[in-house]
Image (cartoon, rainbow, N blue to C red):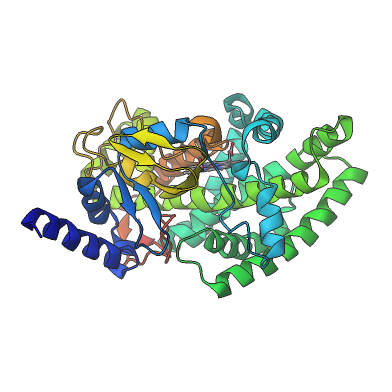
Length: 408
Ligand code: HEM
């Protein structure tokens, strides 16, 4: 065996070990670099989830743009277990392709255009200020539990039309469902997710019935109208859309805001720069999305043999796309491991790319811009309250358990 091959095998072993290690969970970027330096589209048949692991920027963009790579539900089609979970996932636009995907996306995208989202600005500002009022005198808070989560939760509840007092249960439901699509999932998390789906179905069926009787000015009522005006949307798809929006609208936005605050605390000179020049906020949020991407991984299946960068991805093979790695590819970004809130252009792929590009991107951007700007304006001398930060045990999402801070 040549030295070169030996080294590569050694690298593979380390990578294998590290994908589920505490080191990976707290800092996945060195492992991404290792994978990328082996090959930007790396075949790992010995991983727990065998398939191609994509860490290169150009390769990620090419695969996400290519409709030969299909989205699919994260549970094996053959599995008879977890029936509720499987059925609801198959009705979500995220896991649909071609015509069905286009139809659902058209319906829902109407209510997420930048213009419509801009209309939520006053409510977002008011909510951010109320949340900060609640902690102002305590001089400390947990960014995750006291700020980012209630903000994301109140906003998505308002848009969907979920009564504010009922939104608390969504945190638990979201955490449970996120685990079902992550590599770290176990039989237990899948069974929990299946039970959670049952509860969500009961909850939303009841809410949809209420809105059918008395429509309100909210997303559920708008979608019901679409459903009644033609066969554009089935009952099951309406339910699945509500559940998808609750999950997608919660988890990632909480992580974007929390990761943004952490990044600024780690780069105090960038924090000062942003405080002094508030016009930088839009670029800063793009950089937070790139630097600590809330969604780290998405997946596709090849529907045909495809050549790419000297390799052939065969029909039926799984492709795991590491967005967090693509966003730190040195071939695309100068000094990728450094936070630079003035970075421009910043063509990161944190919201995906192509036909499944995140539908809630305008909303997530606006929430993060208002949240960070207001926090910096109102709270002085932001400091981390503990050096021991813990990340949640997830591979596909970059999610802090908590972020306790102090301020003046
Ligand atoms: C920082 C916050 C967010 C991030 C990083 C994010 C990330 C993503 C990514 C990467 C995808 C594409 C997945 C793929 O191609 O497999 C996606 C799709 C999607 N996102 Fe987001 N998202 C965020 C916030 C939101 C919000 C606030 C909503 C809604 C309220 C939302 C709704 C959706 C929906 C419906 C899709 C599926 C679109 C489709 O299949 O056509 N997201 N998101």
